Image (tube, rainbow, N blue to C red):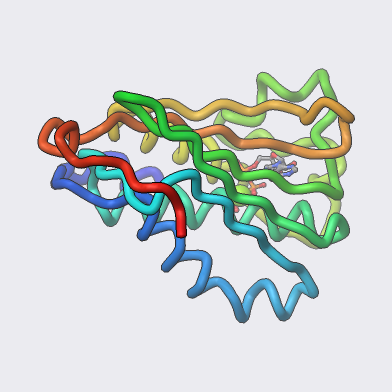
Length: 175
Ligand code: ATP
Ligand code: MG
């Protein structure tokens, strides 16, 4: 898995708002199989970043798969975007299994799995988030984790920067 982080990056302008819509659409059968729903709340109809499509898809794939795997019982996945002048923040929020407060800093470590996941049937290796964090940094961004205010949700927060050429693109209100 980690070999992904060694591939050369092919950075190009990518409309992240559309990419996310397409990805979530492709995940539809997986949501259905897991009896989950998703809500997508983009705050603009497009936002062009400088990114590598393969790495971005890989990164979102990890985060969405985790949200389904650990958030199944919470029934709902929420994806939001918050566009700023030079950057965009993507929030991926799930409910259900929450990460204990003491583990929050550790989930990005290689092979780390929160206690409740270790003996469960979810069967991961604990590499997904270590890789995701590396990918986010290679894309010039960063990945954070927060517990929602009520403590009931888990929120992965991805920051990405605008494309130089995209600076001149006017942001439109979402349809
Ligand atoms: P892998 O992704 O390598 O198959 P994994 O899912 O266990 O295995 P990570 O993706 O790195 O590994 O996640 C580390 C741990 O963090 C998980 O085992 C789980 O305990 C917790 N975790 C990750 N994502 C979420 C989430 N969206 N909600 C709740 N807990 C999560
Ligand atoms: Mg994972």
